[in-house]
Length: 307
Image (cartoon, rainbow, N blue to C red; front, side):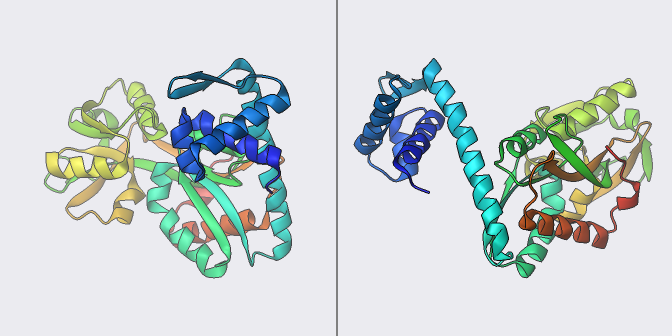
């Protein structure tokens, strides 16, 4: 849909996100003068100033913030409308946007996407790796039709439990702890580790369990990606704590996993939906693909706890 006012709202959102006209124009594939003119026309139409222009940078005025929030709701509703209309096509075409937490994306999504694409080649998938909070926000505002993550904090999001995910110590096979089948979490804390940053829920879960064990991890390096953590583990000969299936998925030679106890860091992984929201056929079909793959991988679906 390309109504002039909708186009102007899209342009405003792009400028607000980019922080200046040049980057927004590049993203929109329009000239900077044309973009500026469209924003001015929108301001004239609404009778307010939307942007505070300060040299090359711009920022939203109070009125601009109101318009941007309304525009975000409008486009979320339009996307919802288009999604529901695509329902009629019987999954021969359409699009599906979903958010997935990093750890689950690493070990589960490749197989799920392959299965879904084989069955529904006409559906365009957009899989975004995002933090739990971003997924819940995306579901609530309509940016995602489906999410895969953990127990939601927002009442606007509900979970369908899939399986119980346990964190394990992952270390080089030559590491002193590698010969143990199971170790207390407090023992793991005595050894240097490379970990995910505290902005990620996997690290926050580990910190909570460490606190229960009256221990603190010896962190020598922190990264915001699993690949970087595992590279550090290999090169620095230190340990880390990640979901056990990650090791199998990445196929890292020379690494092994050791079970943790007292306590065992664990959480329920599930499908996330907007509460009482419309569930399109593409989302339902993708959810079925997720269930199929988790079953084929032997994950403990039966042990997943209810929300």
